[in-house]
Length: 422
Image: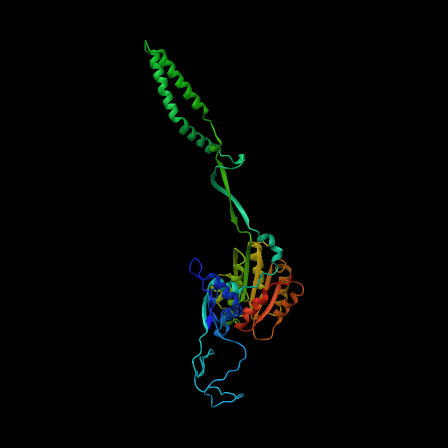
């Protein structure tokens, strides 16, 4: 049996083309391994590359076998045990009868899984494949790249309006000195010789006439050198520098009251990191605002956002009010794409849930591109979930999802940002 495998290398010694061909061929198995890695990893390693393991039965290579095919009958000499139609029993023992290609068992050694490493870019590409930001069509003009004009020295070509007079005259002077400097020195010498001959009694007239002729020739040559030439012109050069105009801000709101344990916060952090990585692959300028709340809301840094814990009750409206104040002060909706993600276990004062609904419907949802609410709980949903679900009937930029365990994070994330049907 002969196996043919394409292992041709590219110029740098890495089989890049064949690597991409391999990933495309086994994308189903690789994507499954990537999705499993999201829930298996720690929150600090969620954006790194991954080691993928594929069972050997899934990576069989095409092969060519030599020999005659089809159904044939053959008589072997010396057969005194079997007749036509007899069934031969399977050989007993470990690997009797030939080498096995199956998995490991107690009766013989199997083959190990095929393991290979994918890079960070390949990992993120597979992780966020077929995903998009909802309602991005409304902000398509902001996706265009803007350019800022700035001075970038001088150039020999340009329009008359950009002529730099000082640089042009300086170049003209240098050219005239280079082209006529030696002739002017020679002219001065001839003029001195002519003056001495004219003051010398008995000087030959032919010599004087010859000097005058040479002087006239030099003057004509000097006069032919133009005061300014196109070669002397210098123009102000203006270049364009890319100015990012597609900018986004992501508000991360999380309940840190006593009901939110560390396991719940860990699941919330995994979701937030996925969202952050996804947005950074779309926007060049992304800012993140962390807001934690219990009965009061506060803007904090990342460390305090994920690892601090408070006790007491929960008032969700305090976080929504602070988010609206920060957005109005620092992130105008005309210049920024605004996204928000809220994670909670669903606990809230019953009187505060209608307040949250009014804040979202009147101040937040009309301005944000997308608002996702993630409730991390195994318990029955309470008033906050119900109020948020009612908002979905009037707004298409809010999504409400429930996460019960770590394995639900990535499927819920893909459901929130799946491509919309055209």
